[in-house]
Length: 131
Image (cartoon, rainbow, N blue to C red; front, side):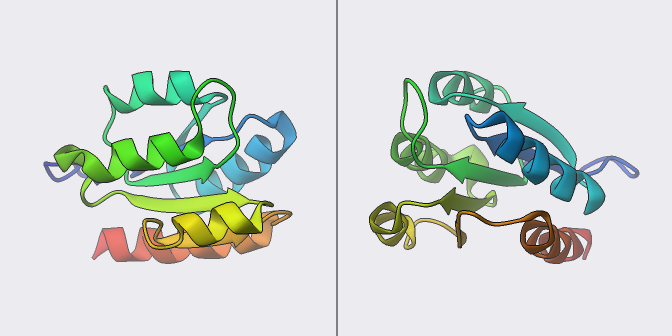
């Protein structure tokens, strides 16, 4: 979540870090429908660059990414004081990786996960942010 309160009428930001275009479209559509503005980032290196500029409210994070792994991105997010309130949802088919990251993540979704599962989760997060 941003350091300062969002301006009235500005939706929270969800960053989708996913290298699979079709999966990213589903995640982005679910977050959009839940009321988030969204940004899709297709690789780990770009994610680190953008996260240096952004303070998202929600990050949906794949574990296996080109260039920089989701594990490294998770370390970056959790060590950055600007992102202490950022919710991180790890989405992966790698159950061992999911177990490794479940302590750092707010939620872990096992792929394949669909629109409805992510939408319901994003909607609940949006409700918490609006309080």
